[in-house]
Amino acid sequence: MSQENKAMSAVFLTVLFGFAGFSLPYPVFGPMFLKPELGFLDPSVPEQYRTILLGVAMALYPIGQFVGAPWLGRLSDKVGRKPVLVASLLGAAIGYIVVAIGVANANLSMVLIGRFVSGLCEGNMAIAQSIASDISTPANKVRNFGLITVAINVGWIVGPLMGGFFSDASIHPSFNVSWPFFFAAGMYGFNLLVVAVVLNIPEYARRRGRTDMGAPVATRSVWATLTDPVLLPGYVVSFASYVAIYLFFCFYGVYMVQNHDVTSSFLGMCAAIISIPLILAGLTVERAQRPMGLRGVAAFGHMLLAVGLVTFILPDDLVWIFVPMSLAAFGIAWCEVTTSLFISNGAGAHEQGQALGIYRSVHVLAEAAAVLVGGVLAGLNSNSPFVVGGVAAVICVIGILGWVKTRSSEASTVEAPVS
Figure 1 (cartoon, rainbow, N blue to C red):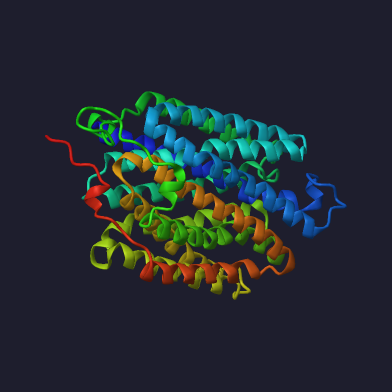
Figure 2 (cartoon, rainbow, N blue to C red):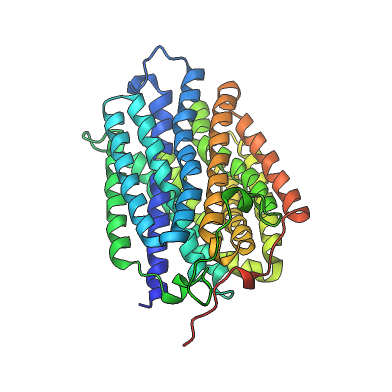
């Protein structure tokens, strides 16, 4: 296997495990916080406060990523991708051990602290995307970023299934809600070993961002990169896009618990089913981009997301609810690929880590906003998060067609290695 393929394999595994750990709490936290009989919160806590606490627990992970991603990305631009990635994976594993102990002992403070630490270290998603950008050529960049989206959505299969399965005592009497988090910690430890052994950045990729004399190119401040007139519109659209995405992902389970009283294992099955269109979309984005262009794929993906969100609240039958869920899921994959490419293509070769780190911070800031606002909205009316998400997706379409800018892809992709 070539160095490039080994690097992409390590990237794929890191993203897959990262999003498996990231999505794992969704089928667990909903029932854990909302059902008094499970005993995590005192039975006297009213439902409205339970949804707010659920939103806080979900939000601390992306808040940690918001803080950590730009600086981890910036550090990887300066000292190298691999050592920063290894250190961050170790920190994420420790964070999940803290969460697991907190869940096992019904200690809300430990759960919240562990979520923040895990999120702080999971800013390494920006490093994984930066590695993919470093080793990509103009011919294979869309494909490589599409593979990252496939890894994200395979993670959405593994995480909720793991969370739903290991937390359901009806499957095995020894299972409980702390098991998935201990398993996630071990998963990050395995990922760390794979990265340490397998990841070897090709020499031509390590030379990116340096002058012919080997001196590092000066890196702009985080603020200067954020406010770059080419990058800023992409960041704004990405924020609205991920608000819509996470209003769907974080609250379809809450909606089903509130309206259909489903179990955590059923929610895990739902996540697995909708991951099929998510993966198919990630595999088809490169082909769709050829006739439609990046902007066309982005606009169409956000329209599918808007339609899926708004129609999700219409069916009364749980079978039919998978139709709008699948529409939204297919659109989400195209949204994820295209918004990341807007940023990567707009950034200089020497600051991919910082630019994509900021993108990751925008992503998780949107997630935090979605879960905090959505938690309040869900307590007032279970339909509200999906209506607001549909509006955000339509705003993205308008922004993509009228405001988002791009630079030449030649400026943001690596030259192919000479054979």
